[in-house]
Length: 261
Image (tube, rainbow, N blue to C red; front, side):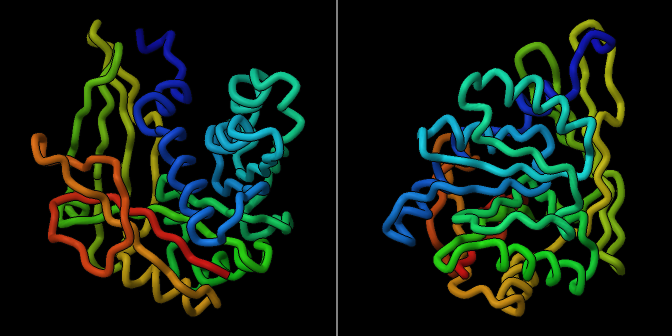
């Protein structure tokens, strides 16, 4: 089963829920700016899954999807963009480093799935945030996500069952001096076969205070954290994110962050 599997399709099934992500982004932008957004840029886009979901929402929506990996983008073109048919022209795929790309006039810029954590220094992160700010229109909004909790600093594995496979999140290495973290995604299948190191990430484990401070240093204002509520029956996140000034000392949490130009 592993030899026949497509790692990008598995990733989209196991990791992403672009419908919920775009719901949040679209609704939150409208609340913040009292208008509908049209132009969205998805940074570190990978297969451009979120950008395609954005285009599906309204005929007036357009998207730019930026990623440095041409091979992953080509997969996204074939399996995500082309199936949009006549709407495919409303997505522009840009193969470039996000620090070098020049695509402005955006209502929204996204940096999701913790992808921006590939930037390991405050200087590099601030430079990226400044580039994003320059790419936004005057009332534009930057949306990010983040994760943390005391389990985030552990070297550990977590498995999640999916339809036809098991997703394995492997926090293989954490260095408390540098803040650097190496994470892997593996996939296991019912026949005993597996895909080891389907994806490998060399990140810095950024904290929310650091992210907020660097956004403000880059010129953003009204930086807001949206904390996820808890399902009383399962004790897990309920998928509902609301603005919060304080969080809870959970083992693991995921948040959204918005920053207004």
